[in-house]
Length: 138
Image 1 (spheres, one colour):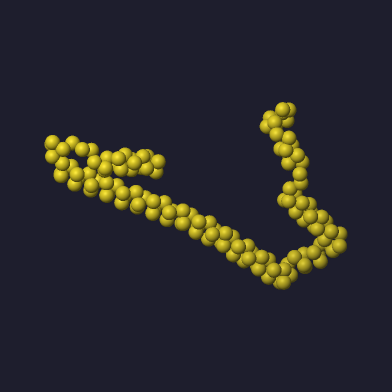
Image 2: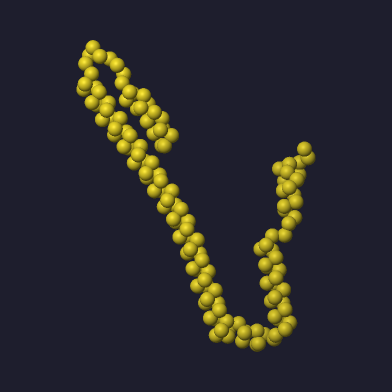
C-alpha cells in the first residue's frame, strides 16, 4: 500500500482534502455580493440601504429566529440527557433493591442455619452475580 504525505495510507483522504467545503462557497458568494453592491451603488446609497429601518427589522427577525432555533436544539439535547439520566437512575435503584433483597435473605439464612447445617444457600450465588453487576456499574 502506498502511503500519502499525511502518513495515513488512505487514498480517500487525499481526495477529500481537495473538495470545496460549503463554508468556502458561502464566503466566496458573500465576497462577490459585496463587490457587486459596491459597483452597483455608491457608498452613500449602500449605507442608506444598510441603515434602513426595514433592514433593522429584518435583522431583528433573523436574530430572533436564530435564537429560537438554537434554543429548540438545546431543548432537544437536554431532553435526551434527562432521559439518559433517568434510565441510569432507574438502573441504580433496581440494583439497590436487588442488593437489599440479597442482604435481607443472607441475614435471615444466617440466623436460621445451625452449626450442623452448612448449606451455602442460593443467596451466595445471587450475591456473586450482584457483585459482578456492581463492578460493571462502577
